[in-house]
Length: 506
Ligand SMILES: [Zn+2]
Image (tube, rainbow, N blue to C red):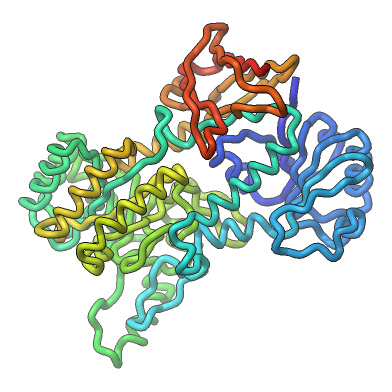
């Protein structure tokens, strides 16, 4: 029996979650001790190498355990003799005590965090705070998801280290290559507009998500969302003075960022959520802040977490577009200081209709390219189309975007749908891996969930010099398709909790 991957770090399971995004299961420990003997691969991240740790490390190397050392400290750098290594190489392969090991000579976690959550917000020239500063991703890199690329490079290193073909859970349901979320912010519209857009979406079989400001829409209109099973969530208002005169902007910024206004916003989040829930008859679990405003990354996300908000889509930009948070994947928000995980899944916003307004006819080319990228990087792309803009040219562009996404086979679903799917995926593990005589076996199980239907798996088409021959589920042969760059993986579906998968190579 393979024992799989052990992560040794003190990061509140951050690295574990990062691998989980790639569909990889791992165990975690805070220290290097005897337990490392049980594992095939040990990933050590940001660990202080005491004399004791070095003893464990050297001993395990002699036993030919595999290691990936991330962000090595001075002591281990000396032991491994990588003092002069450059920081910008992704991986340094090292032979040590006859074992091959990989060193990532930089703080992988911090870099991922910076991409995903951005730098702390600063007030813009109007004295307004956006959720975060997205300057981490350079302009010419915004069409490539930097954090996803970084993570997938680590996966390649892991695959290289392991003595068995690594099974993983695929990113999307039903073997889909990419997904799209169409969301609508409800600013300044009447009931008839809501009904019009909902009808339009229904006609085009689009399950969208509406973020509702409690000052827009009637009770009856809100209830129609429940009745028609449209995804209704909260668009939280923000305490600021939008069009304050130049000389008052500094004051306005200070007003909206002091302790009391933060308290105020915390209370209003709960109140607005309750009002919408009571009057719509629907439980509210998702949010996008009006104007994409937050104060600090460790206040509003914490309130969301405490208020029972399960997903958010505030990180993004109004006039800019692309992978501004380095990713086309949802991720759990974390505290900046200790990476503590909040139970709020962030769906970064990739493109808003303001971008369509700016680009005119070029919008069509721009979105087609963007959706092509989504397929290439297996992203879940979030759009925001305000109800108020969905007429004339913008409506044409919206319909064109829908049709292109459909033509390319992308999965169009609401944010609630993807939130549920992502959590199901998160709560499912690949366990009991064995690799003997070119035959891989494992099971896909969830302790929390009774049902894990809809998840797809991937396994490499090739391992060492052997080719994948067939895949079995509980002894019965099942069909697979090729997926990924150069068709490197086989993708297949298996229903049922805990069923044993067998993969034959030869
Ligand atoms: Zn708004």
